[in-house]
Length: 426
Image 1 (tube, helix red, strand yellow):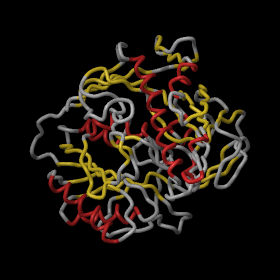
Image 2 (cartoon, rainbow, N blue to C red):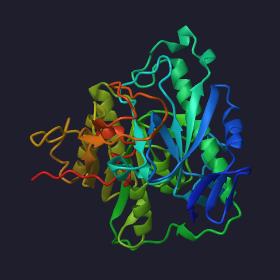
Image 3 (cartoon, helix red, strand yellow):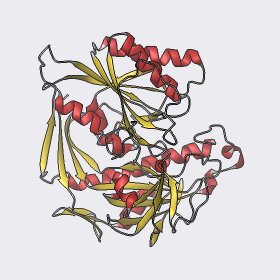
Image 4 (cartoon, rainbow, N blue to C red):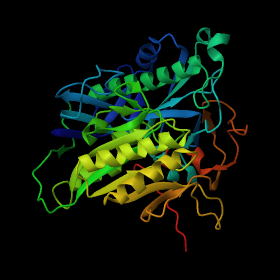
């Protein structure tokens, strides 16, 4: 699968009468964006705002974040299953608008649980240093729900993460709207000569190079538009992620942008044929409350890694709840099969005496921490707030000085290689 990714570096984001890309400035007509979003009846209204790095602005209740891209040539289109048909992608040429992000913003809706719901982006101060989206030119979409969709029988909570049927449906509508807007903006780069083009192509490898897979834990991610559990795992090519086949958001630790620009996958692709042979990416995860289900998913991961002929695996996981057990058992399964693993993992410990592991196995002996999830961080007051007046969990005035856990900062604790945090034990 040969994929060319053309990068256009955007230096400014402005409103104007016509959406277009002019000399590295992205001009957006807000009325066009509103009209595009409001084609979906799930929304009563949407606000469109431009936010730039360095401004005294705080965006609260952030959800998915998407980088504008457009498929210039090759099979399929960007964001398959949402914007384009769900056909296989990852080949041809794709153009990206670097330095721009579409940020979806929305307060909780009726029937939606609010635990782990709060993420935010500060455009200045220490919060801007921790989150990658404090340094991008952001087009913020503030969604207002059409409450006609939230009848009492559809609001009843059936899921601890997504709540009722109406809340889950609305969450998908927001993800799709953000991707539609990102594609609309990405289309402005269709005929623009990129500043640079990076080519990812399979090459014949020296058989002595280590054969490496990426094992990537998921939770309710959209894959080609389907939100599905992966109790037996599946294999995808990294190029598919770059075209938006993997998308959605999860508690601030991952979003569509982080997989479009997954630094771990990018480095594995760039090093393919040089000092390693990159075999592909194994996705796994799902709701596994019982031991047999956890053993099943861990066994499936180890089997897929063996079938691919892996010598080693880079494992991207999340530390929290019972999903940690699935992850650690998968590491154990690979290690016992002779596949050496390195785990990228957020720290959930509190204080110097807490090792930060909910569950661990002795085989997990090579771990890189991506930072402390619950470390408190103090953020200064901001002049302008987008997304409402108060946080949830707990309710806090969004305009004032805040002391919140690091996990509140969108993207600060991800394992895809965008954050700047680490944890060291001495």
